[in-house]
Image (cartoon, rainbow, N blue to C red; front, side, top):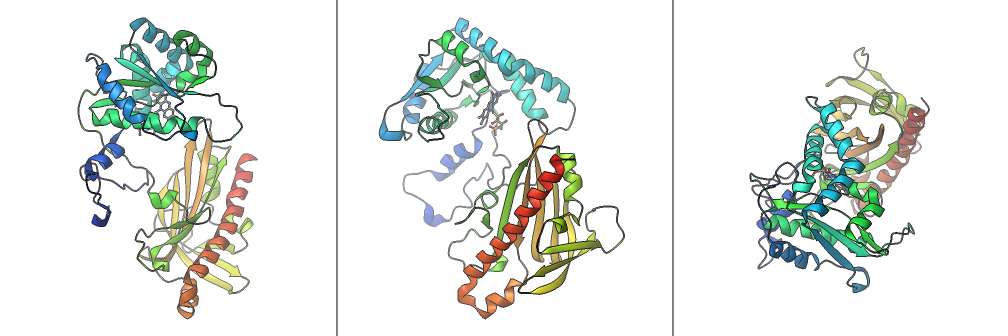
Length: 407
Ligand SMILES: Cc1cc2nc3c(=O)[nH]c(=O)nc-3n(C[C@H](O)[C@H](O)[C@H](O)COP(=O)(O)O)c2cc1C
């Protein structure tokens, strides 16, 4: 949904400038593995055995990962014995498997975004005991909720390296943790001593074939902040001068204890922000409207202590019920002064993550004259504007959260 593909699995490194090529590193293969190592559950070959040698090679590579204090604290369990696998699969079934199967059956035939994930997760739950090898990365140490780094931080990177090394050898893995809810029982089945923590259960099998693709995730520009939390930048090229047209922006996110539909009804009210923002004063639809529609336009009124009051025309450019509401300010999307967006990501438990973003440009905006007058202060002018936007956006997001949670 609404996400930018950053990689194409057939040519995964087109976007990397040639000057970053390193002798001896086949970037296409490395990027291919990094971008196509998926949680494989449906395409596990349950009939083909996996040699220990291959798994141990992958563990050797995984052990190259960093560890706190450079200590050798990771331990790995490879479970092949059919009785042991049966016991683990029963624990997996109890902790999540039966729930996954019932979720799959409920979602079957619907367009819910988790339909495929549940089909795949349920298949694994029903077949875990038949997977040739179950690999359990462990670490010496017990998580004490101290919030200090050091425990999982010394094993997660290695466990993922294991999955990447496996992928490069034609093996398929899936990162699973559902079984960890039964901590005591896993210890009993496998004899894991107190003081050692298992961190995942990785089913390992040859894949039954076919290509694995990279998938749509948010682009780096959307999830990366520069210098200050929430300051985004669309431009990738370090050598380019900063400019409004290159898309400085701001992002505010907050988790809300309310359903996407409740939040949706609040964020699509074009006047809602006026209750909370110190800059946005309110808006009216140009054509009478009961609510947002793609292409619909509204006039917004704003005020700023240094600029006074001004009005803008905006056009709705993105609209997906309960998920995405976006509009471009000014002269059409291609020459917009700014592009605003509300996004709702559904979380487990009838909750959602609310995300509010603005990207300045690509067209001229209120900042353009100031930058033209003081080009050497461009970065500062933009950064201050990002902070102003962030302050108002935080007020709006917190306001929506309060309204939604109390409705
Ligand atoms: C922390 C974590 C725990 C997970 N636990 C399970 C699990 O118990 N069972 C399962 O089938 N998948 C599990 N997954 C896999 C996710 O469902 C999977 O990553 C997601 O569907 C995206 O698919 P992809 O990995 O192919 O991109 C887990 C993934 C992570 C990161």
